[in-house]
Length: 229
Image 1 (spheres, rainbow, N blue to C red):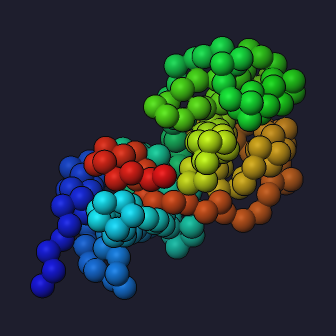
Image 2: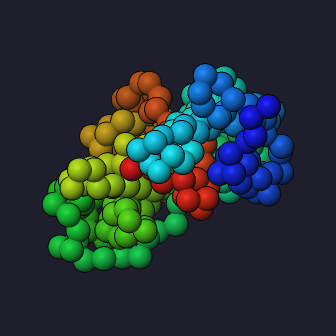
């Protein structure tokens, strides 16, 4: 029997440490598949072997389902644990604000989206910051009717150009509920923000279809040196 690669085992051990559930580990079609099953929540992560990466196993992709419906992946193992404890998202906290940077220091693509939001909602509501190697545009807004909104746009460098991170581009929290699956780009996020007419009750003009996730614990993967380029 083929032994489980060290990186795959470390990832599974981290699941147990943080979430408290023993995941299943199996070799499927050339991949190592980790599957976490909880009431109402199923999360998977696949690891692939690549000679181009020094012959190492690295995180490849994954999925997150809640009540059988696809969701964007969580940004950390701690967020996954919170989701399992509260699948309805009644008390979702936005990601922490990154350390603020002057907008002029950010790459052009980041500045473009920053000013697109600032022109509509004001510079007091939106900031630019760094989170490790990523740039982040962060919005925190409270409307006169009491509705709250938190938007994060994560940018990664691909082929020396900055773009919204392909694996985890957006997080949108409206009145403590995660609406990330309803947006695929900044325009849809802004439309949903504008449509938020009542606290916790977005309007009808939302975009349909879930955003595709990349794996159930991107931060956990980075902690275990699984490099995603």
